[in-house]
Amino acid sequence: MGAYVVRRLFFSLFVLWGAVTIIFVVLRLVPGDPAYIMLGPDADQAQVAALRAQLGLDQSLIQQYATYLANVVHLDFGESFRLNADSMSLVLQRVPATIQLATTALLLSLLIGLPLGVIAALRAHSWVDRAISVFSLMGQSTPSFWLGIVLILVFARGLKVLPSAGSGSWAHLVLPTITLALPFLAILVRLTRSGLLEVVHEGYVQTARAKGLGEGIVVLVHAMRNALIPIVTVVGLQFGALLGGTVIVETVFAWPGVGRLLIDSIGRRDYGVVQASILLVATIFVLINLLVDLLYGFLDPRVRLAGD
Amino acid sequence: MVAPVAARRRTRAGSARIRFGFAVIAVYVVAAAIGPWLFRYNPVDTRTADRLKPPFTRLSDGSFAIFGTDQVGQDLLAQMLQGARISIAVGLATLLLAGTIGVTIGLAAGYFGGWLDGVLMRLADIQLAFPSILLAIFIAALLGPSVVNVVIVLAVANWVTFARVARGQALATRRREFVDASRTLGAGTWRLVTRCVLPACVAPVLVVATVEIGHVILAEASLSFLGLGTPASTPSWGVTIANGRNYLADAWWISTIPGIALAFLVISLGVLGDALRDRYDPRLRSL
Image (tube, rainbow over all chains, first blue to last red; front, side):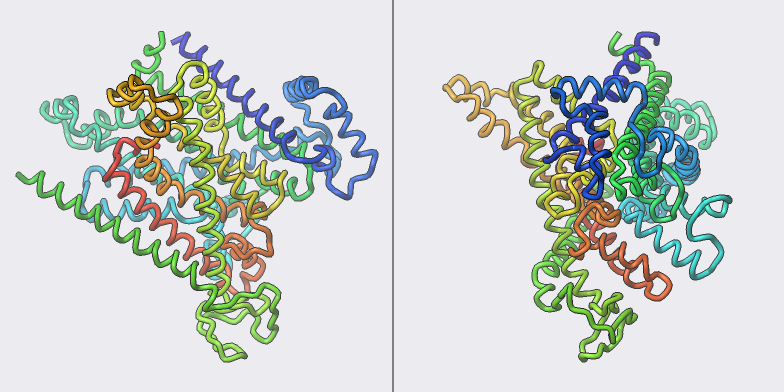
C-alpha cells in the first residue's frame, strides 16, 4: 500500500505542475504583451511597469517560467490592483462558501442518486426504471444556469418561499444546492444502475442469495460493495464538473464563493485573482482525486497490487 | 426462452431511440437553416411599442409573436432561430477541430508508441485532471468573447476523448495482419496510418462525436451566459437567457423558452448518442 500511496502522490504533484504550466503557456501564447492584456486599456504606466517587473517580462522565457514557478510555490500571485489585497488571500476568503455549496450538493446527490440508481437496477427495464432514466437524462441535459433562473422564477418570485440570491441562512442554500446537484445526481443514478447491473449476475451474489440472505442484504452488502468501485472513480472525476458548475451557480445566485470571484475578476481583468482561483480549484480537484485513488486502492486490492 | 424476446425488444427500442433522436435533430437543423429567412431578426431594430410582450401577442405591425418579445421589442422566436444556427454551427465546428486535433494526437500516440505515447497521454491526463470548464473560462477570459474564440476554447477543452478513442483503435489495429501485409508490400508510415489505421477510428469517433456534441452545445451556452462565449451582439441561446435575467420580474419568457429549446436539443442528442453507442460500440460506455 505504501508504494501505491507514494506513486499516487507523485502523480498528483505532477498534475498540479502541469496545470501551473498550462496557465503559464496560455498566458504567453495569447498574442500581445501579457501585462497589457492582464491590465486592460485603462491601466496607468506605473501599473504596467509593476506587473512587467513582477512577471519578469524583460527576461528570457525560461527565466520567466522559473520566476513564475517560484511565485506559485510561495502562493504569490501578486497584488490585486482592483481590490488592494493579496490575490491568494482574497481567493482563500471565498473558499468556505464554495466548499459549503459543493458539499451540500454532493450530499444531496448521494442521498437521492444512489437509492434511485439501486431502484432502477432492481427494476431494470420496468416503467420505474424508464421513468428514472428519463429523469436522469433530463438532469444531465438541463443547462444549470437556466435551471437556476427557473427555480428563482418559481420559488423566489412566484411562490415567494425562498430567497432568490445571496447567502447567510439555510434557506439561501436550497436553490443553489439543487441547481448544482442535479447534473451530478443524474450521472450518479446512471452509474449506480449500470454498476449494479454488471455485478448482480456474479457468482458471489448468487452465493449470497443461495445461503438464504434477504434480498436487501444481498444487494446492499454483497452487490453494492463491488458496484461501488467504478462509481467511486467516476464520482471523483465528475467532481471536477461539479466544481466547474459552482462558477455558474454562484453567478446565478450571487453566492459569495470562489466561482463568483473568478467571474468578477475576469470582468475587472484582475488576472492574479483569476489564476489564483483557477489553481486553487484545480488543487482541490486533484486532492479529491488523490483521495478517490487511495479509497479505490482500499476498496479493490487488485488496483494497488497491479503496479507493485 | 424469454431472454431473446427481451433482447429483441430492447434492440427495437434502440432503433426507436435512434429514429427519435435523428427526427428531433433534423427539425432543429432545418429550423436553423431556413428559420432566420422566414422570421427576420435584426439586432438593431428597436420597437418600443412591442417591448416585453408575452407569448401569443399580436404585435403593432400585425405579426404574431408566438414566444413573445424581448426588452427592445424583438420577436423571441426569430432570435431563437438565429441562436439555433449559432449553437449548431459552434457545436459542429468545435467537434471538427477537437476531432482533428484529438484523432491526430491519438493516432500518433497509439501507432508510434514509446516516449511519444507517454508524453501525449500524460498531457491528456493533466488536462483531464483540470476541470475543462475552468480551462475554457481561463482561455476565453484572455481571448475575449467571439464565435471563433469559443470554438478554439471548447476544442482545446474537448480533444482528449477523441485522442483516447483514436489511440485505442490505433493500438488494436497496428498489429493486425492486414497492416503487416501492407507494410510487407512496401507501404510507408503515412499510407499505413491514413489507409489502414485511420479508417478503423471512423466509427467510434463518430459515436463519440454524437455523445460529445450535446456537451459542447451546453458548454457554449454556459460560456455565453457568463459573458465569455459569443459576444452580446450575437444572439446565441446563452446570451438570450442571460439577457432575460434582467427582466425576470416582467418577462419570464425571455430566459425560460430558449432554455427549454436548448435542453430539448441536448436531450435528443444524448438519446441519439447513447443509442448509437449501445448499438455500435458498447465498449465506449465508460467515456
